[in-house]
Image (cartoon, rainbow, N blue to C red; front, side):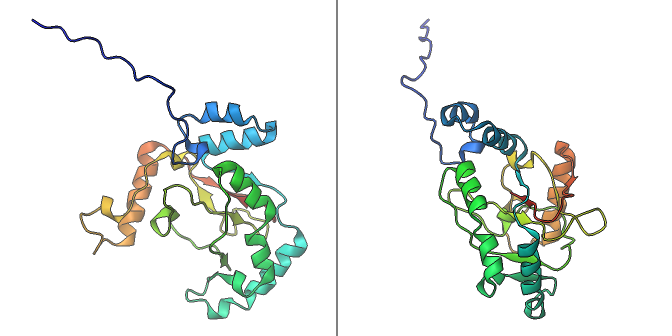
Amino acid sequence: MVASAPELPPTGSPPRELNTPWVESPFFEEILAVKSPPPDLAQTARQYHDQGYAILEDLVDEGDASRIVNDAASLFTTAVEGARVQDGWKKSTSIARLASHPRVLAMLEFLYGRVSFPFQTLNFRTGSQQSGHSDQLHFSALPARYMCGVWAALEDVNEENGPLFYFPGSHRLPEFDFYDLSPSADGVDYPAYERLIAALMQAKGFRKTRLLVKRGTALI
């Protein structure tokens, strides 16, 4: 009888720099300690790590919000879907300024550890009434998880005017797409994907949260 020797642990320090945002790293606490940001930024990073979102208050003042709303009003006539305008920044300097807001870009660079840049804008006339979904199905990044959305309220948001909703903590789920529903993405209808997301939220116990905020607040 031959007894094998116990397996020895690998030598050297484990790598800490993974090809994923540091706020989603399994070594998050260690990295946060090394970065040692001010307490307010540390709290934001921990919330982003735990809950998957951050809120920026007083990002847009009333004057800029009104200018964006007025600029977008004339663009809805050419919108394909009527209720939204894509890439309005190309025709509105006020929309372009918000898309590249220094405070947003600085926060994204802190949270993701890379220089960020805006690549699309969407302006909504009314709530989209969409079911729960992840935008990574529509556009993503290589490496994965380096894309995020920033939603800004251009009016006070309450229960009566179609508030945005989200599921805190659901960012920890794997990315799902049509290939998770079928060997071929052909023929898979979008409602089937929405049903998958709804079932996942229920199965994992994620709580639907509505964003009720005053004008000028943004959600990352």
